[in-house]
Amino acid sequence: MEFERPGRCVVGTVGQPGNRLFLIQVAQGSRLAAVALEKQQAQLLGMRVGEVLDRLAELGHDVPDRREPADMGPLDAPVSVAFRAAAIGLAWDQERGRLVLELFSDEVDEQGETSLLQVLLTPAMAREFAARSEVIVASGRQACPVCAQPVGRGHFFGARGDANG
Image (cartoon, rainbow, N blue to C red):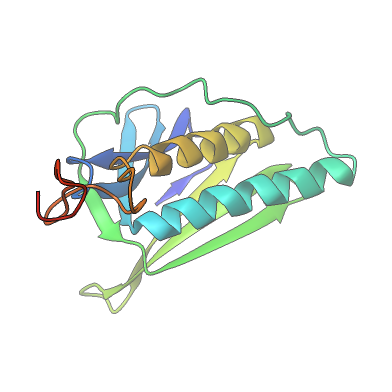
């Protein structure tokens, strides 16, 4: 699946904090694709995209400054996961002036091929992608005021000041 001129490429989630499925969703016209990935992959990819853009700006490319994400809307429906990302590639296409994001599956289909999602992002779209990724990853479970671990299943802080309630 190749998206040369996507209208949207975002990190989003399905499910409740502590039990979320992280996705990269891409839309171009009527085409829509989603690939599942781990929270850490989403976090590192967003950080790395931001670092690449910062470096491109240092080299004189026209790259927008870091800013808060403008698009914090929900994922587009229907959300249908094509595959789970096993490997992720990121490159700068000098000729097109676009950041190339590639997500690879490790599962082999009937033809002996692995799935690939390739997305070409303008620097502005890539900056938006990085900013939204940071916000989405950070919007999980609240931290415990005592131990700073995520509050969730099996973790509670009681009135006596200990974990027994």
